[in-house]
Image (cartoon, rainbow, N blue to C red):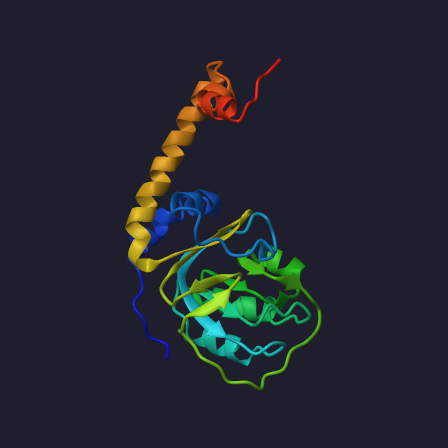
Amino acid sequence: MTEFDRPDPALVKELGRHSAATIHEAQGRRGALASSIKPVDHRMSLCGPAFTVRCAPRDNLMLQVAIASARPGDVVVVSAGEYAEAGSFGDVLANACLAKGIAGLVTDTGVRDTAELRALGFPVFSYSVSIKGTVKETVGPLAEPVLIGGELVRPGDVVRGDADGVVVVRQEELGEVIEASQAREAAEAEYIAAYRAGKSVIEVSRLAPVLEAKGFTAG
């Protein structure tokens, strides 16, 4: 199974204008992958439809099949059981991804060749960094829902990653999440303008009634 519906690329691009944290908050604090999945370099950023794959721990056979099957713009999302002690992806496979136009990789196992990955600029978000090699033995599913970082990711859902982490947006909710993200950023811009105008955070965030209800008074 390698075919599935993908979202409108224009909507994917629009979502990518917003940070992972903004998107997470805007969609009701949903969709954030575990904070253990981090970018290899803080400058790395990705946004694209998920091409999902399930791999056995310490086995990257199906990861290579996924890279061969994914389309330009896809983000390869690998569920491998949160196995830290394996370097299942490195600079060689990153070059294969770049040649195909793949937008990035998110994995709950380890990667290696991190200096080379940074130099290549291919976005990689991983559970760990490990030099330990892998085998190519176990066949598994492609383009089926996977559990990664405590979240269910379905093929075609949109994955957004930046310096702070990774969030997933359901494909059918993409438009409304973009609108909610835009509204949140507009509200935050108003907060910042108010701070610069001399207002306090308690005033801007309307915290006085909350503090009073909890019995807090400032001396």
